[in-house]
Length: 178
Image 1: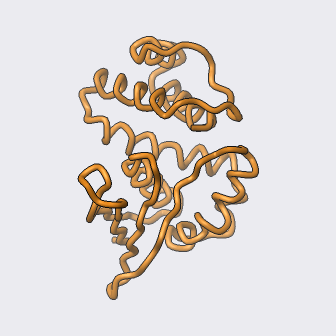
Image 2 (image 1 turned 90 degrees about the vertical axis):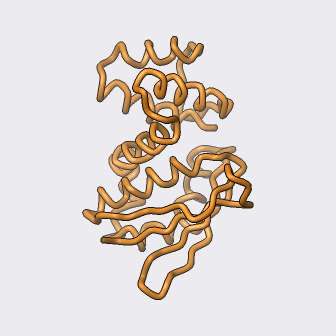
């Protein structure tokens, strides 16, 4: 996993809880050192941070991961406005993930392993987003999508209709604008 994700988590933690909170979280997770944006780190390190934050907050790890995703989107929009300025809705933004955003991410961060998404639309307009990844980070995908709703001023209702964690081949999120 690229260090940019760890940098986002650090920014979220320090923004919410002060500069010492990041060091406290690293210690609780049994980790040390600094993460560079271009560096590559084991997924287990992110999961250790999530587990430590879950223990400290009393929230389930999936809720922590969802929170990280939601808060990360705002930071990404600030750091990479070119991915957001051409869009006025979650729908148009999501549909650029595979063809525009993730190829650019791989250029910026060589070796990044981005997920792949398949999209379809229900008759009522809800989007079905199939999340394909070796990682079981569907709560982060959900949080990032909620963060996109925040960014574009849309209230979203997201339900997960199937999950890789529960034996499915991939995860599916149903995204409806309320």
